[in-house]
Length: 501
Image 1 (spheres, rainbow, N blue to C red):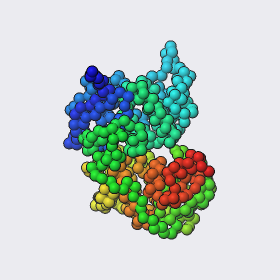
Image 2 (spheres, rainbow, N blue to C red):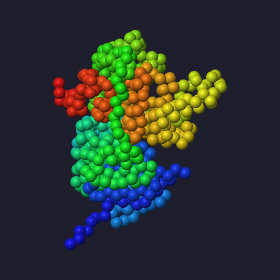
Image 3 (spheres, helix red, strand yellow):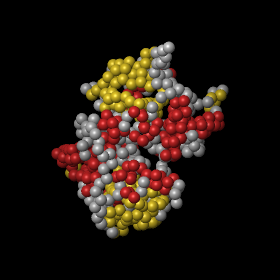
Image 4 (cartoon, rainbow, N blue to C red):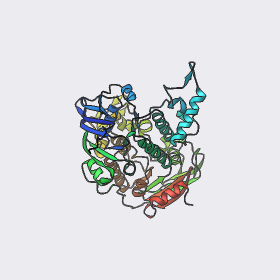
């Protein structure tokens, strides 16, 4: 007796999408079964974002077909996807910052009685939803979203999507700002939805997450489908090779360790969120700082760079006590911070690549009322070539670059006059494995040239394998510094979570 197999919840056949002369998707085919977690994997620029925007009704394909079950459908508007119960959680947050958590979750669907908003009922439902989803980190549903951390805003975005019944749920890098505890709560929720027959499309660059969560994986490269495989039947190394088109021999190449004199010494530093922090950093050394979301690593970086006010403590650079009360002071002392939120804190996304690269160096190419275009172009050319920035034109908006290339612009622009000390806060968040490899190579080159570097990352493997020394942060305090080669990821996690004294 033959078994009749149900049609996929969602099937794309031969999807093609062009933007002018650029083909973003070329004959892509992809299917999601009921009760399946299907990962979409690929480098930045591979076509993932374009594909999910087609599924969300934001873009329309130039060719190809979309099927929901046995029915061919057209997603010409966001409302079409909404009617088909296709829920999309974007990587870029789309919350209303001046509204509360509850108001954001139920925006456009507020409980109303006799024409009046039932605020108490809305707050009750929001609290119950967060509790049911295991997203208990958000305790106050009446809090204004703009006052929440990036991680908690991400949880609100997830809760809003899951507040409505989903047939197909699409998540684009949902864990990029979440702690380990929050990640586990999200995974529990996704498995519950899977058991209910929901089809889930999951996008992530974190290989450990992918192999632990997914049923199948489809890889895109240069807008084309490379292949689909069951998760347990393909090695991570093969997936990486599919993604980048080449074998990556060493994913985490630690720079050679040849420490020089002390570049930075911090004693008893305290700010509003950092308490009595002391450490030392040498030239030619990478100090990795690890901690759960909210532990205080970013706040330390902001204090060192003069963004947050230092209440107590002393900063020494080259053995000399210095006063850093603003980013201008930090730059004068040879200290640069590359922030974790490159799109809002690092780059002016509406401006061109060339504008962003040359912004710190206006004095080099603007002389009174005269613009020295040759000097400007030389600065841009050195950064683009030196850091391998992939772009079509230096005058294109920087927002059009992939995440990895935006990060290269953000780091590379400071190398026109290299700083003594470079702080990288989550430099590989949201960038693909190929771009990570490029960034690790660049870090290695900077360290070999003698630069002192602080690496802040939520990726334990990254911290342990790129750094020479690793520091653990907990509740705003630096609880220890250890040689990277003498501590394991398990030991690190125990220290970060308080599981080990």
